[in-house]
Amino acid sequence: MKASVRLVVNGLAAIIFGAGAAALDGAGAQVSAQERAVPGSRAEIAYSFAPVVKKAQPAVVNVFASRVERMPANPFLDDPIFRRFFGEGGGGMPGRQNTAQSLGSGVIVDPSGLVVTNNHVIENMTDVKVALADKREIPAKILLRDPRTDLAVLKLTEGSNFPTMELGDSDALEVGDLTLAIGNPFGVGQTVTQGIVSALSRTHVGISDYGFFIQTDAAINPGNSGGPLVDMNARVVGINSAIFSKSGGSVGIGFAIPVNMVKSVLAAAKGGGKTVKRPWLGATLQTLSQEIAEGLGLERPTGALLADVDPKGPAAEAGLKRGDVIIAVDGQTADDPEAVGYRLGTKPLGGQANLTVLRAGKKSTVQMRLTPAPETPPRDTVKLKGASPFAGATVVNISPAVTEEMSLQGPAAGVAVAEIESGSFAQQLNLQRGDVIIAVNDQKIENTHDLERATAMRAYYWKVTLARGGQVFTTVVGG
Image (tube, rainbow, N blue to C red; front, top):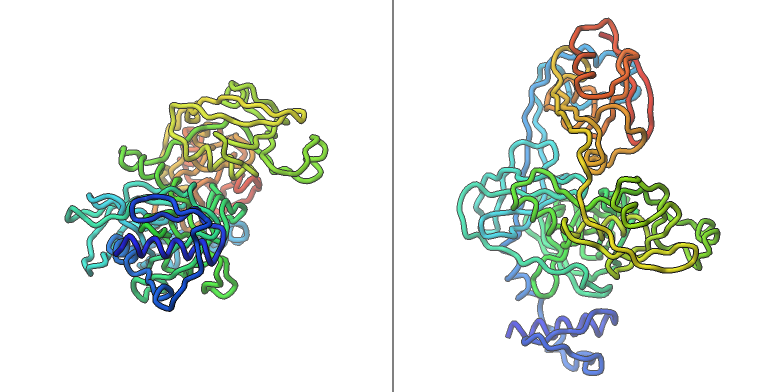
């Protein structure tokens, strides 16, 4: 019975929306377009998504995250110039205890209790609990955070043999395919909504570094973040992440991270990694405008232009040059830099990728090694202490690996802020992960120990030059 229900539901997707992949019967055989027909009776229209929901729903969870902190008195908060650039900071009133909370959804993808959710659901949080569909609440530890994709992997600390949901193939999706979104919108409890795949390969959404999303009109609301987007075989095809809305509620434009990106993050977590290592291109990509495309002799502005190439990177090794345009990765079209980044980001390290390239109007294919960005110089991690504005910040030296991991922009000089301790001076002053500290009190900072020495002694004032988001500025903070 369940097989026939899936057949009819998939058939309806093709009939009503006219663009889905060929439907599958219970044995997996394809049904041709000629055999599809409008439902012939009221009974056929009455078929339900319930079998899909019953199979998928037990693996969907609610994620509750929190952080409790006590804020020390911080003299730097009184400096109006610093507040002008950094805001009021995240600390609240000195000496008072603050509790931050977050609510989202997730999906169990391994019987041992591995849960995939959004990074923004547990970002900066220390305590995480997961509520299962059977009403159990289980503590969870954070195995891996990946801000670049806005994904995180949790591990349930009690129990075993949990219900799971199978991971599908997001590259097999087509516009018009039916989908379900399952999660906990607004904290009302587990909820199922239905829609279609409205668009694929959505870029320039601004949610994460890998701007390559599935768009759906299945209703997604606050609290759905981290929950699965499900196909008609009850498989995860995406992780719901964000909506476009002026009111805060669903208007039928939701975005999900493709499950093929989830697989790479999950593999890193299973391997014990704290970060996800991805193939390094070793080049800066630029979006093609109509004018640039015409100047290169292209018919239309599709692909990713190589604006700069690292002479020691894999792209240069493969023979790519500045001015080349990448239009496909392993035969899959890449219309812009985000698509190139996504296609490479889902590839495993150690192999090769075939890049289709346009140069002087001629198309060719080159092979590029899939290697991680090098950590040269070494990170040399230092956690800053004392009475400086940077106390509580962990900083690292800048290398290609750090630049890729934190998506740094602008000059490569200085040291990068990798982590901010909860309740520290650095947090209260709103220093952020990815800030690049270039100079302190006119002393040039070239490595982490330069900064450690520059901030070791108390000072009457702190003149700070740093970069954020590619912009460099200098300000003075009272000591």
